Amino acid sequence: MPRRSGGRRGSEDASPPEGRRDDRARDPGTGLAGEAFLGCSRMIQLTPQMRLVVAVEPADFRRGIDGLARLCRDALACDPMSGWVFVFRNRRATSLKILVYDGQGFWLCQKRLSRGHFCWWPSDKHVASKTLAAHQLQVLLAAGNPDRVQGAPLWRPVG
Image (cartoon, rainbow, N blue to C red; front, side, top):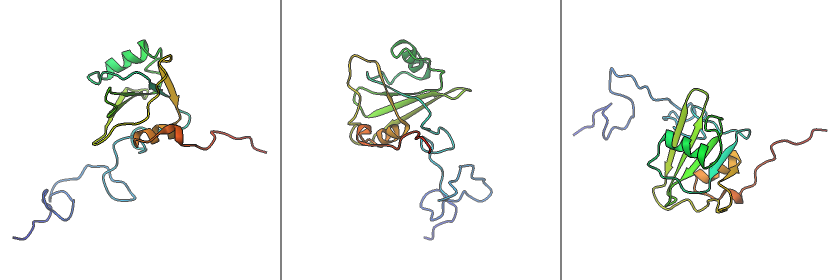
């Protein structure tokens, strides 16, 4: 039986059925739907100037935006509406949540690993949080060790 063009299942082309508009954002380089998370300039862009705060203690992942914002205030002694990026992990170290306020509202992003766990996490029990650089967070999100990467200096004297 020949395959139908424009169908959802088993179709060679990923175009929408005739008469329907495809509203997915397209990446100009690949033509594919864009990533919906960090590293993509469409939503949240990590810059070297941003302050990234990692909570040392694991968080209860049943908490949503309000619960994590309260945790920022109480446990980390930080203002959740400061524009800083707050990173939390669950007890099993299989998932991360990122909370950030962009001036209009909160973003809550989560990454859960399919297999394995995040092998790196700060373990100093005397402090509630640790700061990271933007490139270190991107390594952490790829389940790597941010302490093993060396980024370029943020500035250097000219002349």
